[in-house]
Image 1 (cartoon, helix red, strand yellow):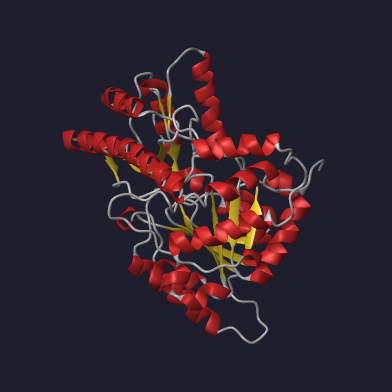
Image 2: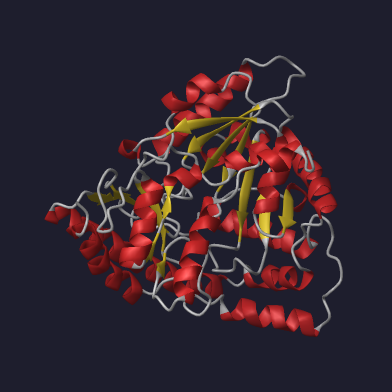
Length: 418
């Protein structure tokens, strides 16, 4: 065997396979509405002007050397104030860790609190928890969720799996669904974690809760973001938050994420991130520290940004609801948060014009790419079975006009199926 067991067994990204198909069709000159990537087209959604100016200024002042391993102190202090203003959460600078986006924070949380072979509990669909478990050699426990509860896990679904688990990984608003916890459901899950930890003996490692709220600033209408520590303050010693600027400021390439939680866990995550060299660039940290303290600039940007994202999500939702009203076997869940819409396209077993039978969600997706010029991501890429005909649609790389124009193409493609 020429490579490690880990490398041999690690599964590849379904999203990358889809991207390959999209890129090939684009190379052939086809116009594809790419709703696959959890990112933004920076020509459609540029980062805030003040942040951009701050980054340029920081480079002009030669902030190009290594930053501290846990992040610039002034940024951690700014994040502390930002968390207090945004969520009324009290975390001091020594309880905050800065990294190059949220991925190193999630991975370092796994590494800091989970041993190989221990259980990690998380819902399906969800983003990358299965891959982080594989990287660590942990035992992934995937809880299959349902459309009836907007694909958010419930306490009843989680309860049987917490005994002996090291980590419960949750996300709200959820990638890939764009749906969110309501207060009651999250409270019941919090109470499960509290109850489980009360059963553990003195000196026994507690059950930790990873709470990814990277999309928490992007909520729509009457939908409200909730977090475990606000609902149950006694969870503060066991909850590690994942957050940052990537999504709320359309700044995925700026690479400034922040995690926060118990100081002893954050200290260990700091060492892990330092050894990975997964720091956020210093100039970007300097600029972010200043930008997030400018309440007017932040609120102005978020107001316009959220409005545009919501318009695109609503147009897509209403378009699929109109197809459903015509009798097509499709559905969608009302947009709640993030940049995603959950779509159902239930056409397994149908035959394409070329005689190909669409066996599963992947076949449906590739059919729509070729026939409708629309690329989605099946929930199977996020841990569900191939027979689950639900899909993630991301609107960050498309204009409102792009979204409106794709609905008739989807309609015509579905009419061709027999």
